[in-house]
Image (cartoon, rainbow, N blue to C red; front, side, top):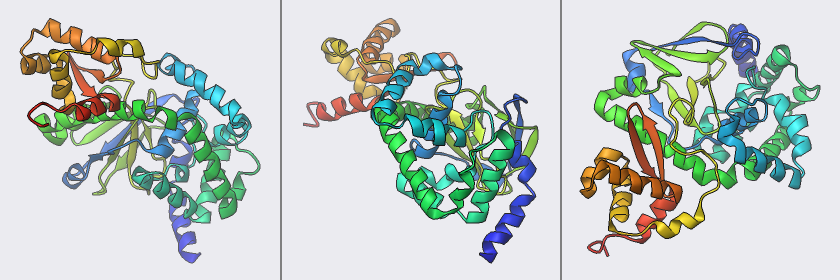
Length: 362
């Protein structure tokens, strides 16, 4: 307990920054992240969707019409699923008050170790020291108001009930779309890997435009909250791509915690298709022929339209027609990067390629 109180005292110095993390009245402000050579070496991109950040970001989609077109189908089905599973009251009374959009929400609800999966994140929430939980729910109350029951989250039993509600919400409205979410994240990672291979860490950080602007040794982030500087001091930076995040990137509020920036894989790097739209099943019947099979295999590692055309030995216009048909069938995902379009396999496309290897592989 004494150790917890010491940690809490140290966090008091950053309380102002925590309360100013995301403010609904101040709009977007500039966060300046200062790198050292060690920080550049320790900068990395999360390998998979982070469930607790996706919960937070998806809850924000209920609180604004910004980007609504991109999630129209999800929004409709999510409301229906929540009603059917009797989670609509928990949504209004528990989850939305804890995760206000464009305002502070407690950091302990989006643990960094959550990148290791649901169990790791849930364990981190349950093991958060009570003084830290109390401080963060008090900051929530000061920033945007909070229900009277939130101080009871210092009790592990109440926190366990909250985790159960979050898991029920995740299973109801996010897990059913996991293939599409993961496909978008894989496409984004492919973009980042290509930028890293051609330009190193400098190229990776430059690829994060327009929401983030790299001017060595400082990364300028249009993030909610007051103008402030964050010195990484050798801790590195974890970049967490998010499907449901839209608009401004979201940083961890407390500068004493491991540095994390959550950014959108849709906004700023638009897909050539509307996300979470119903897949045209009838289009699968048209996905036949050697050229399209070759394009699918060539897209396994990510390839631009021009690269696919050269790999298959066809014209760029013919490659565009084939990728359009494959995309309509839900087999590839296409994302525009500058003046090129990058194509990657969806989980369905990857399964088709694995089930139909080349004749020599058979």
